[in-house]
Image (cartoon, rainbow, N blue to C red; front, side, top):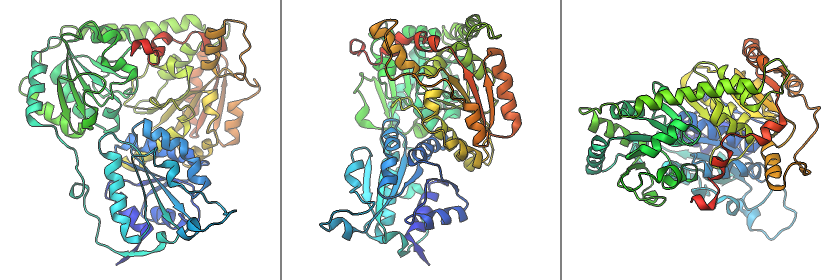
Length: 577
């Protein structure tokens, strides 16, 4: 049977378990959008192509599969540029698909061509694979190569375009083959290396597991839990690996932002690193808190990209392969010889929880809850995170607000979505929409979401409130409002001292996000007292609408009192690298 190219692309992606599409349809894509919806896909049209790209990125994280974002030729795909760059730095396997005018237009010597630019040169350095479907019979090979590229080695984005006439051409092709028939799936590590790693783990006195971003994006929580229980040791998260594994929440704390994690790292004699680049946020595993036992600490590193081994620090046992293949190998190797609890495990768990309890109590001394003191950002985070719904998806966004969340958050969700490597603020609302819709499409369940953000970031893509309303998401956006770029105000103060004019960092105090939200069809709440944050969140969820809680926070505290800001700065400081 003859199949149009647009339908064949959908078939090939469906074979990989992909069933969501994000983008704004134009004449190049209306056939694909309609066909996708008829095939049962979740098709989402946001208000900006960058938002579509961010939604697709969040979809890839929550499903563990590649995702698809659409950008129409010219301005549409140009709008997607920030999301493409973000996917590259965040290691997210997103396929960006764009139309293009006929090649005869590209080759003519003309001026004044409408909606035309040579697109490939704009993106080929920001993706792992860039290609054009010039002929219909190239469809299978190019789509499959894109999937190989986005998932192989260090994951990342791909860009595919096609001249306008190609999408409607028809192909006589067989049914798509299963992924394992054309690419490497769940690659395991060398069996001798796995055995060597198991021996080092058994011999260690104070092992730790360092859990990174990829543990979440590969959806390997259950297998890593089994491994952690066999190793019976502390679990330390990187700043990107902030999604907690069910059943391990009480033994998992964040590197640097938890004192318990610092002690565990300092005293460790073996580190099993999973799904992390060992980059600046963990001081490359070499400097600061890693220095004390550097001479005796053994490193086991599970990494899919062989070219990454030994780059940021020497590795004793490299396990080259996909977490989905390697973690079960380690579990099998250790299953018959589980370790006794590491000496510091009980203290790690006790001290880590005690610190969170103390931080919650401390935040309440900074805001009395009755409006007599401004709402400190730490109190804002504590109250919002304590109201986080069970089994929800947490989305983080903002500058100073995120730094406060690292330290003060009182919830440990199994799914946390935020932009860590690139530091691109404004992604929160698109991330929330994309993650929640993709999760619903994959599981059939509707899970609540909470976005904890700040006013500066929320305004980037505030139009996507309408998308969330249209798709009926149980999402509550809790917005800390200080009417300024809080992080940047802090930089001015630290650079020039108090009293300096902070150029370009402040705006009108008349913006009311609860009222803006109501205009989009949301439930809005306005909060000036800390004790009212939780009830406002509860009313939002009870309303059955998308909720927006405008929380007035203390601008001085938000800019001057960021917790462990000096630690954060060591990610950039050359002396620590």
